[in-house]
Image (cartoon, rainbow, N blue to C red; front, top):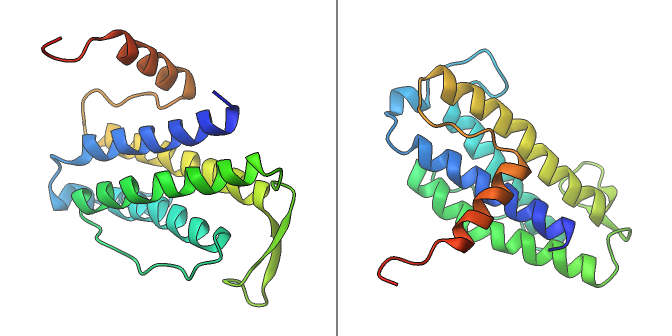
Length: 169
């Protein structure tokens, strides 16, 4: 698997796992204030997914989609929509040899020139930065089985999943 595909798959899968861990939490827990980053689980999850959406839309030359549902189920749905869109955009640009090509980011005033590769790297590292904050918040709330969230743990899980026969097989 190419490194870019590996990083994008890890990014989406790990964000999904943290959202699943947050599903049983109450609104009060999701909105509990922490002296860290954006301050709450919900705001941080929303920020991670919103950035994936906005950068994907911008790189595709599309208008930025409206902000969506910020419930955990809504965020899971939004992640399930945007993760494959981001992966298709990023891998398509890589396969076309366009990662060093420049594009104009119209969301800035004045518009800013960026490379596709730099933007893709930003999205992935931005998500990881905020996932570290999410890991901390989940642990502080006493959520059990919070993963480390690293690429090697994701890879081991993928390998274990490939070895496990489907139910009823």
